[in-house]
Image 1 (cartoon, helix red, strand yellow):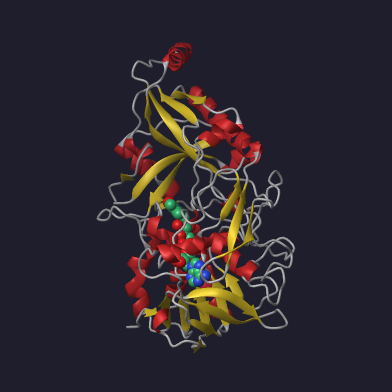
Image 2 (image 1 turned 90 degrees about the vertical axis):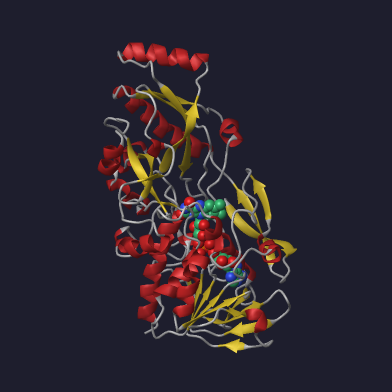
Length: 500
Ligand SMILES: Cc1cc2nc3c(=O)[nH]c(=O)nc-3n(C[C@H](O)[C@H](O)[C@H](O)COP(=O)(O)OP(=O)(O)OC[C@H]3O[C@@H](n4cnc5c(N)ncnc54)[C@H](O)[C@@H]3O)c2cc1C
């Protein structure tokens, strides 16, 4: 069994020469290492942190922000083995086919691959997140057998399902570091190093290959890794920082010849209490508002999503609207329920109201971006600054979906919806974020439009690939981890081929 090597125990100036180095031991890096375990490749995994949270290591994630209020850069991610999965929520949902398409109503949208390219990798990704049998949008019958679903009638919004990275005997989602530590140790061709911070990706003089990586420990050791191939898997923010800070050969930073690294940052806005849903028939089944275990042990929660057909027709992005909690209506709300129920001829004497929240997809915006500041961390790496933006049209388009949802509820005489926010200020008051860091090294076959190609290889650099949600060129509202894992496993197969 291989050891996890604490890089602080290495002699200063050590030089490692593996076939492949994976930078970052989060879900992407760990899953890639396991996908290549027991292959002929000699693999080194470099992880900045140790097995647990350490404030000194975490401090290297601190940065600045400007624009709309956003989670602090050192609060929305974690820097130790397992990465941000050490505090993730475990919500999983595959992206839809339409999420990969270029849409003429959404500038800069579209992937160079279709969902089909990921299909073969979702089953293993599902195993890695431990979310049980693949059900998702085939869950209606199972859940309706437990308690009848709210009838939505025909229209642009349907009931979709999240699955959770939790099993019946564990209330917590999969923390990749702790969960897969033994598997990493058991992989005889993988050597994981902890407390190993990559501080520079050093290109050969012609700029077309990574020559070596500079690595440092917080107690002052320095070493070098000279691999054949490199995979950068440090998360959607830190990938940017390493590429931009490594500017000794390419002055704009590695892969940044077209000024794209760090641009198009996105996350899912998750504003609370965006609308009030009234169910005329009374309380909704528990699976609308909380994780619910199906008879087969799979844990599910319902959400309201726009159908692909409606998205095309109305030109709206992806969104997932969830029931947050039951609410008491005020007198105006009660009067509206009575009037509406009378008009529809339904009995609303047991009506129950709920606050709705959502995860909504932002349109790609090149000016929502990460750049470097003049301030440096303990190892001398410039810190990041995020310019966070959200357009009025992002709110307006989500309202269009909510309005359609309300129309359907009335048409099916099942309930009604009150939209709570009109103005940007209303939305911003309850604004929260998903902590999903997307889009900053976007994938495109055209080097002028993207940082990596359809295989995840950095345009112009032959032996550098990127794994993780920074490569998502359009984002969907589905939580990213299951999807980035499928993409990472696909990258594993690609590396097996190109490194054979
Ligand atoms: C509060 C919260 C809740 C979330 N909930 C969900 C959810 O419900 N569903 C979902 O799908 N996603 C969720 N996410 C997002 C999820 O955690 C990420 O999608 C996932 O962790 C990304 O994996 P990654 O391996 O790409 O990056 P990370 O998890 O960020 O891992 C990157 C790794 O690289 C290491 N590293 C960084 N810099 C260096 C360096 N210079 N040298 C060496 N190593 C380095 C880090 O220590 C870390 O271990 C949540 C995130 C947060 C913060």
